[in-house]
Image (tube, rainbow, N blue to C red; front, side, top):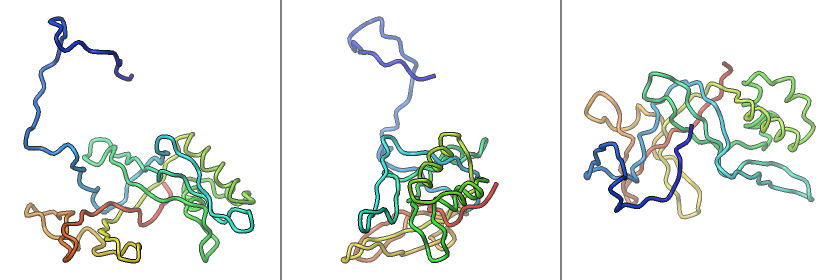
Length: 197
């Protein structure tokens, strides 16, 4: 059930409110810490208003990907990670071994036979759309990664893996790492591997 949206008269004496507390010291733009490195069950979904982008050669696609990136919603009821998002650049770009990121995800969702029947990027994209509409899930292995953008415009890893980050002083790890010449860089959870459920 969604909240009702309507205009509000802030001077009305009839405006009823529940009492809430606002933390004046907190920053509303602060992001939650990345999920700890580990294996999680996740449900992928498209970002709002997604569209497919493509790279072409001789007028034919060589890869396709959705923009914005796909969101993997962690399914871990009763844990702090439940509902957290991990973003991934899913594409149909064929790697050296014949697989693509999207074909791997679909295969780990149990759709290996259907992937084998795809005869082009468009077929694979359509299968991916259907799988996400059906709410199919996949296991993801996450890994913290802190990156900086170099002068050439390419991103370079400065730290990879949660246990390589500084201590947070409470027995855990801080996602913030100081990089000379750049300042503080915050780690993001990335998907290291897709695993069948």
